[in-house]
Length: 138
Length: 291
Image 1 (cartoon, each protein chain N blue to C red):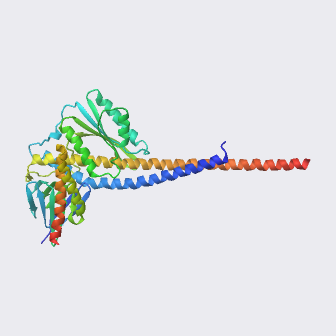
Image 2 (image 1 turned 180 degrees about the vertical axis):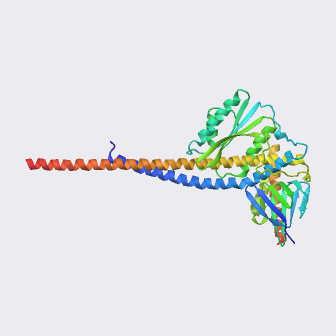
Image 3 (image 1 turned 90 degrees about the vertical axis):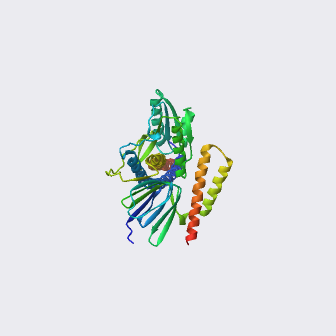
């Protein structure tokens, strides 16, 4: 299979990935979708979720906290505020973040705090999910 | 003329100070390098976001608009002052404070102005002088992280959305090089889409937008503002370290100068003491001979 789809993942902390791939699964705001070769030009929101990158034999999994993606001429640009490779996620820390967020939600403070806690919880759960998915593969 | 002992003490005290300034210079240099790397790291992200905004806001026949892009008559102004937490960095803090004061004066006649101070130095200065402070943040530059930028961005954006302010301006030091900082005053809100760095004329007609252009734009702008705040914090941090490095380098040089001057004094005084001693002895011996 010729890999002519180019993927870039850009975050505020630098470029995470910049290489040819076969396909990429993205968590869109209205459900996950997959980008293959010769995909139509697209701009989409990216939700909190998992990005699955397939390149031949090896797959890579990233947990992202949301952003955008642009597809044009077989180049995918994923522009997100964070993208952590599943292997490098600290499950213990994610678990703690989850508990903290749950605690904050239970306290029922102001509207803004609740929204933030909910998002934090979503991110933590997502990271834990990334770790689990990774385990189930291996 | 000071006594020999006093001069010796001064020399050793200058020496100690010099050691400290030298160490501070090294630390600042290391921190500056790290801050510089972070600035380089956000550049691709900032460019991409900018390009996307430009793409969505300018493409097609219907120009897109967002609540954060609409300008209102300026009645209430928020000035976000980005200074440092610590001193000993030359004119870094005082430049920022002076610029803020003149900006404050400029807007004061026509509108209500409040300050959002970032960094202990700015907070101390403006709260002591009883300027109207909207919010303040101190101690964020030690172990600076993205979360802090998000907090500030959220504060500012929600205040703007609640129409507490009609214009938000950031005053900060931009990092040019280790020896040069540029003072910048940037209108943060209302948001104006910049021209992306590389302007390639593209055909935007065939794009699919998920869910639709307006919601993408509405989500893009806050993300853009987040990264702008992060950039400003990083720039200011790098500039601060650069300023400190230069200031400490100068201090080290000055200490060297004082040290050599004092050593000269010391030697001269020692020589003078020896000369007096010898002439006393000689004088004594002569007196003995005569008797």
